[in-house]
Image (tube, rainbow, N blue to C red; front, side):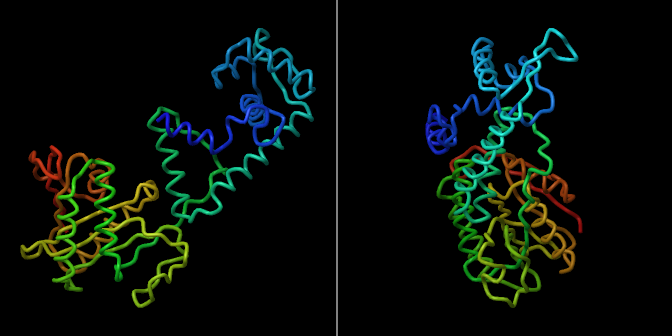
Length: 323
């Protein structure tokens, strides 16, 4: 955590005392101006609370702003004991300059990232805020439109990507060892060697593309900005009339866009059209987000048992859906 803090504060120039965003203001002064510019009514007590500032320090800072004719101070209409802070015309100009520089700074950080990486970065930031306890805010129209998600069937190279991403993500998020990569490689190899287009299917989810191409279109037809962000398989289970859902994967940066739900829905729809009577899957209890997707799709938990696999103590679960 400390290493990340050092990296990020240096990246955004937070330690450039006295010239935050190349303006005459410190980072704290800039935050106060931001709060004043983005709220219709602000009292000094509100600023102390929202920014966790010492009362004496805030009083000196506001005195400095008043001397520079950036703010005016008066009694609150709701409570005469409270001090109402209002930006002057000069203060609004200063806040506007800070907003413009802030937008430019963020744009510089993001401009060279492909859309999928931008989505990953923003999703990771939301995750940090949520895990550390920040209440969700209604940002309204300031939020950018969600990147588009498209599904397509697999092409050459996709199966290898599925092995690599499953191994890397499960190692990073759950500590799975090399035996999990070996299992995924065997599943993918068996699928490729015994593939029946009437009974088997793999879907790849892409984020940021311009639309889903037909299966006849060449790889890359969704546009240079499309990135693979998820996958799932429907395969024969070995028992008559039973399909098995396997290897559901959603990249961290694409979570929250409905990718997992779309992949599972496509899998279930295909199984119905192919004439399967039921669909089954095996997962582990630690995969909470995936289990939620299965439940919403109508799967029911039919059995579970503890096991030691992939270097971890786990609880395996069997799920079933009547088609």
